[in-house]
Length: 83
Image (cartoon, rainbow, N blue to C red; front, top):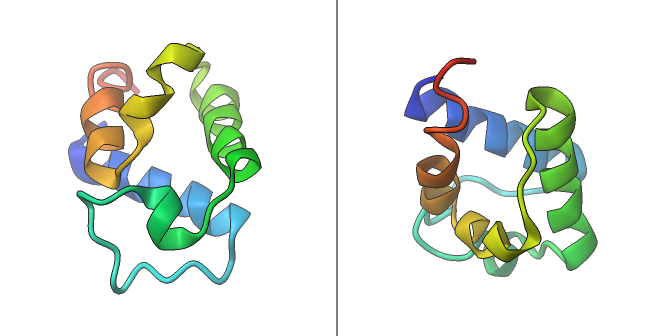
């Protein structure tokens, strides 16, 4: 998977969780939770969806790696390179 494809997957998952999410003003270097008003359950839904779609096991101690859109892409890129 390319960086762009991973980015699109993350945005698609977020949109499924929050249909009113506004990606027009999204800063890829700022925390997603702050910009999109995601709560902890929404964040867990993102992690669970990644697990369901790609069989990814993301340890809880690595959740901070998923804070921003860019950090999500950076973290997931090696894990999804063969998808």
